[in-house]
Length: 168
Image (tube, rainbow, N blue to C red; front, side, top):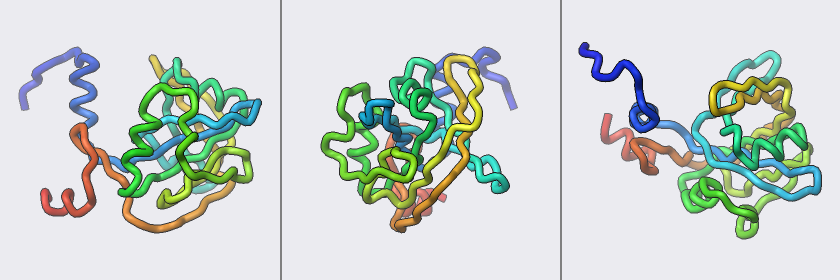
């Protein structure tokens, strides 16, 4: 195998990461005033079963990170394949992302998006700054499984599980 670039640029890294198909999640929270916010991401990882831990990574300049740092909690919403528009809303900078999104408040106070295939409410256990992101480790305090097909992102676009199966 030939090495093409020993110092990968941000563009190279995005292209590389885009080759890995991943489920789409919205990480949501409420700030100390109860105002909800969130961000779309695919960088979500089940870290431990005992204790139940998940890892998420947010940009250091993220408003959602600021709100999570205030509240100490967040909800991981695994979006359904019918929720691409919700993913797009949370992928942008905006003031009131929850304005046109149906949600309930979970036990922690974080918004849980209705229609997601599953959601898990987390309390922040640890934070690590890593480059331009902060890694949050959250202890999962409650989960809900609603079913359906997940929204998947691959090579810069949303794809269905059927499309991935056909490509295999």
